[in-house]
Amino acid sequence: MPPPVRRRSAKSGSRSPATPPPDLLIKYLFTSEKLSVQVHPNDEQAHSRGLPRGKDECWTVLAAEPTSTIAVGTKQPISKDELRQSAIDGTIEDKLDWKPVKSGDFMYCASDTIHAIGGGLTVIEVQQNSETTYRLYDYGSDRELHLKDGIEVADPTPYVPVAPPIEVETGRTIMVEGPKFVLERWKGRRPRRQPARRHDRLGDPDHRIGRCRWRRVQGR
Image (tube, rainbow, N blue to C red; front, side, top):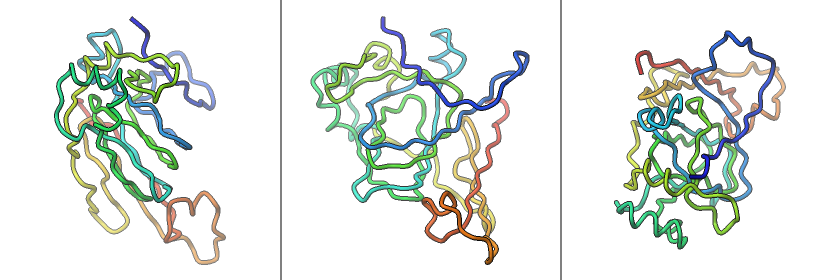
């Protein structure tokens, strides 16, 4: 059985051996082409494989080309046998639900959701601290696939959003609240005389500074 994909993450500073690892990872993704079709185990599935946790994740789109898409779920429910055959013959790409995305869009992806991030995107990815990825399809490349584990953990059904973002007060929006973590977005007006910096403008057409705050859902 091939080992699962474990992507390396950039790290800064050092951590004491006695300090527990963080519950979340936060990444910037820059895609020039489609990323592989993949799926992650949930907590229960991860524990049964000797892994510490599953991998729910979410994406905030900072910038997108006009034709950019993200695939989440299948267009219609399919069987595990059909999923396996589609991954082998490449028709899985056409069976995924490729959703158009634009700057400012947000999407929460539960662990067992089959997904693929398209090209031409700049995305902030917030995820449970796990690098376990089962690759189902990679557009004919020679990289290793993980069909046995991936098909076992996958739920090949249409994507259902957890809940839409809710603005609870001016400048404060709850992007998602559970099931694994809470993500909020805070906004504030820049002082008029403060020069705009490039990274403040990225994906923020009204030239306001975006800030996110994460807090762990207790007992999850």
